[in-house]
Image (cartoon, rainbow, N blue to C red):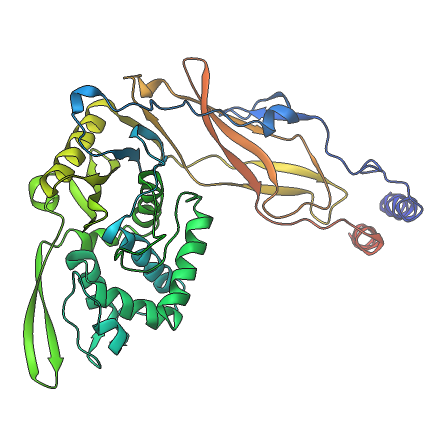
Length: 425
């Protein structure tokens, strides 16, 4: 009996060689139907077109409530985990950002740390050019050395232009090349209103961004590198200058007064110049909800903090957050004509949903969908299903289920090998 089975398998291989397949259609296309996988594992039909569709996000209001009394000409309130815009006022108006620019500088510093290009303990030497920066500074001298972590504190706490340029030169070689990196990173984040000319935010023709774009880069920094809050929440700290004159202490004081004034404040960056007026990207966290309030061109320093506080208070009064942190069930999909008989799915991240209407988020329901089978070859990362979330009968979002590994198409050798395995059993 085993020999007969082995001969049948070998015959099947021969059919494949001559263009016939007992495992897959000649077109190689996936079937049009997919499976709905419930928590109990039952399957129901689900079309591939529906699988490809995403849920449309509800458009947030474009008007800041009059009762908030926002004095700045441009502002935005964004929830960090979902990127949901809660309120906005002229969010895409291009304006000079002053030292709020340094959010992108810090983002690239943390990118370099994450990639292993630099370490917190690395020594940074201040160039004559970096030492010549005006505006807010920590008075680094030419040839003075500090480690990366101290430079981060100087930038995040004291908004130091000299430290920003020194770090830019260390990472990219020159400030100009670093600015190219800033603009490239901005492009990746979809910051379409932005063009950087320098790394510190000094007034320069063409150095512009928007409240929306600042919220985007702020979100990237705090969600990808939450350790930034270790530095952005420092109120006062000393650094040590060691120069030809000897050693002396220098005090850093946070330019973001919300760190002391607002109980949930976690950062992030202030900025002010004669052209930019008074700007801030204020981050805060309360009850697991992280908000970003960006204010641009406020008429006075107190006004920017008042506007940011009003936005944050409004957000915490209106917002509730659903986050699915549960361990999800395994999803496997059979594969036709492959060197493996099935592929295991991987979830593409975790799901969060922000409500501003007081919905009962305990009523969120989940459903799993997957294609009934795949035809080899299967690419790693190929979408094989999705996990959808509904509330009150309406889909509020989904996350994709991706193939966790590639599956190559089986050839003559694979089937011949299987035939010999049966013979040896």
